[in-house]
Amino acid sequence: MAPKSRFTRLDAFTKTVDEARVRTTSGGIVTIVSLLIVLYLAFSEWLDYRRVVVRPELVVDKTRGEKMEIWMNITFPHIPCELLTLDVMDVSGEMQVGVKHGVLKIRLSPGEEGGRAIDIKTLDL
Image (tube, rainbow, N blue to C red):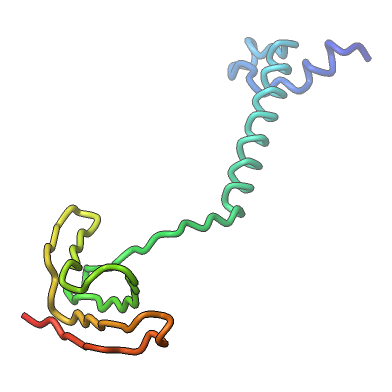
């Protein structure tokens, strides 16, 4: 069998009218190329679906109307407590400057002395 007749049998894009139905080599080649493209796209989508992507980000769900509690423990060994403030900005751009509710500032002794708490100051509204 000649290669031309093999591609002719694979032509999926023949004419719909019986009198005009002609299988061609170019139609068979288009069928094979289309099938390969579809298989490649399906396989690449399946690989993308199976891929695990880890993004270091935090998404806060505010749909329930509740405020989320966030606990932080940050030590600044060489900055006085009076200079520290807390500013919060969410993804939508809403800015809260100078947050004081629920903030606890603890003055520590130097590390050579054990880093124990000297003064505890609670900031409230």
